[in-house]
Image (cartoon, rainbow, N blue to C red; front, top):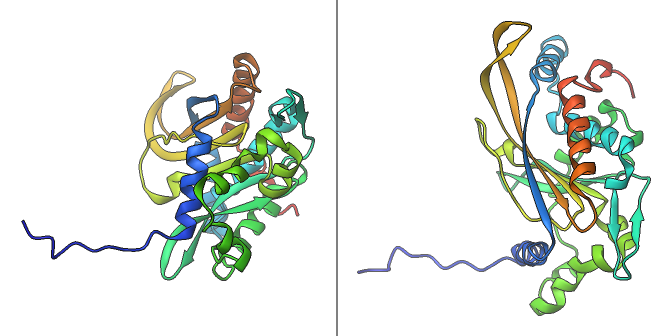
Length: 263
């Protein structure tokens, strides 16, 4: 059997960072909830705005806006436990969001930190995401970062233990919650389940069209697949369920999109 068609490529330093993150996240007490949310109204408003203005509004910005509002109503979800067993509850909602951008002619997702999302309008979050998407190569590493990713694995992975050791330092570096938009890379419904170093991560999956009975009439609706991941060491089941219900209500009500001109 010939192996002439095989190709050996170097393993990039950035991929090492991803491996370190996933290995460390797998040690946490992650609990995943698979949720479907009717986003027909939100999608309709986004399409209407595009038809009227020619501007495509960011669906990820909409999710971030709803998430930040839900955390404002349930602040104890926005918390971390440190190595001494104390729980740090943060007032600021700093969202680490996966933004789709073009690097080297290829569409990829890169992390971007949206500070103070609980005090931001949908439009403000949308504008920041669009600016991040247009930034020149946001994946470029500094010299110090490149050197750090070449350290031995057990040393590199120490940084991902910051949430458990120093929650404030973790917040400054990586935010308090995460939104990962896996659905941006495909079409149709479906969930994605991933470990995380955050107390709360929302993974946006695909959108599917299915019938739903509303006021006695059967209509076709658009359903968003969401994976809501909690650190069970910090968040119990009942508060998590109440938070998910609040988030679902905000998404179904198209929270924030009715005021797209608000800055």
